Image 1 (cartoon, rainbow, N blue to C red):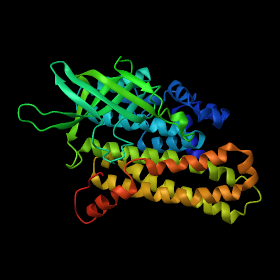
Image 2: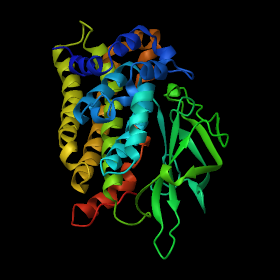
Image 3: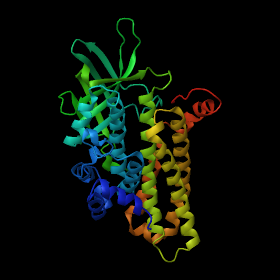
Image 4: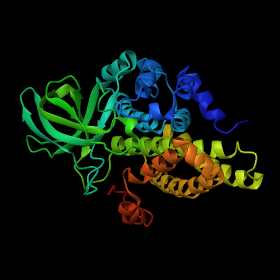
Length: 376
């Protein structure tokens, strides 16, 4: 059993040929702006990965999806991060569709037409209020008029749909509600401009998306729960569980790619190799424990709390393993290969995804003493 063999076997099972294509393409090509990786993913049927077969999807369960994201992260961190945003959005739509609404039509279209869905939620806001919508809305007879800016927004240049968090003003005495507006990228009010200037994860297409007075019909607005400050509802909870699971797996894959290189070197002692492998495999085992519980408990705050704790533990594992792997690879490998320095830099991105550990310290400790879980 080789390191990452199980993960790459899952990738081959659901998206045949993709792993081979990625392995044959240089890291420099996959990680640059305009990377071919996203098209490879789409052509392989990736947009349908976590969509159930009843909606014409591939029906990958959470455990398989986690393993696939780790495999992708080991080949192209940019692709793994970008596609996590798609799966995060789609998994929430699948849960809504299961409630009996017409959302199943959209989910089926995403699967059958291989549509890519970008996430326009509030990630990247300096105030850390990730449940606060970045878009403003106005109610009309025909639907919502939506305006705003999302930056960074992964898949910005390849997306077919943008899922934007909005506040839907209450009418007839009803309270305001959080919602998700589904905006076609072809709408003339949607534009994309450069934003991401870092070399790390440049292939994820994390640029600025501007939405200017776009009309979103009522049937493309999905209500998800109360406004920020109230308890998370089931859809929000499940969305966070999926996001934390898959984004952590993606970065663990990038870290494992370094370990894979280090253990292939004969001069490195077996004890050192085992130390590296123990770090990444223990982290994966913790993530797999979360993934196995998702089908039954994805809407439960207890699983979200566990997912966050595991995510922060994996961050620590990566922070310990990666520098050691780079050291064991040695200066000559570092100086003669851009990949090693690139991977060592890219893995730091996990700490920048919401919710940040420092922001969640208080809410998690309050939760562990009996309060409801809140996302900071």
